[in-house]
Image 1 (cartoon, rainbow, N blue to C red):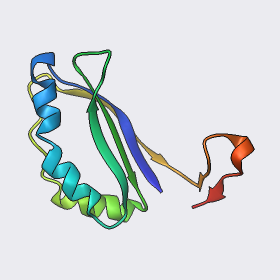
Image 2 (tube, rainbow, N blue to C red):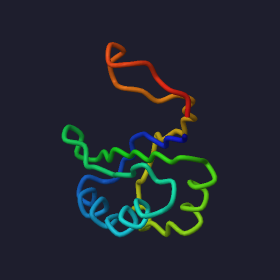
Image 3 (cartoon, rainbow, N blue to C red):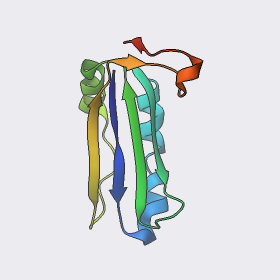
Image 4 (cartoon, rainbow, N blue to C red):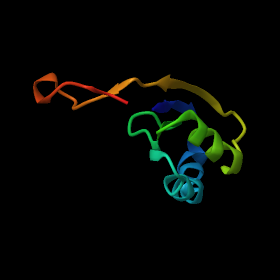
Length: 103
């Protein structure tokens, strides 16, 4: 399992439109094989911040998505702090609810 997550920054005056412009890409991504979830959201505290999360069953499925993604262009001033995480186990959010299982 692969997670891509982090924060991106765009000018505050274009942030909400830029997030909304991703609707088609998000819809298409979620329909792709291996997409567990994908979203972009406007941060409620920082007017220029966009939070980003993608979860894919495999890196190959992520790569297949990237080959056809065609996202909206990045606005002037775009910057990001986004990372890939390779996940080896998944479980409930609290240990008293069960142990993680290998993926």
